[in-house]
Image (cartoon, rainbow, N blue to C red):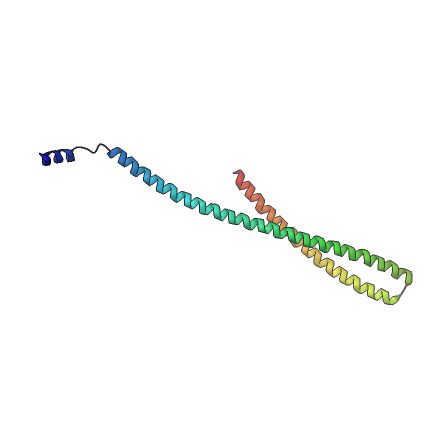
Length: 142
């Protein structure tokens, strides 16, 4: 009789088969979701790294601007003193002073040209940063 009931039970459909299939399907979904989460987290970390690099570029550019501002201040101060020296020279009329002033002025203009090139470079760097930031904001709007 035991053999009969066992064989009869094995012929019946499993009353939990639907639940087992739903669990298996849910497991497949969970595996896919976990894989997607991992991928998205990696993308988030890389995006944060890119943002950190952008932030570092902005800080570096800011430091360059501060450095250039000090160079401008010192150069302007030098021009003011050079103007005073020219005025003194015009009062004294000393030819030796004239040659010295001409050399100093030549050096002043060389430095001014170098500062102008640096300013142009800073301007280009600023435009590059602003373009990148605008692209990020535009991407965020979309």
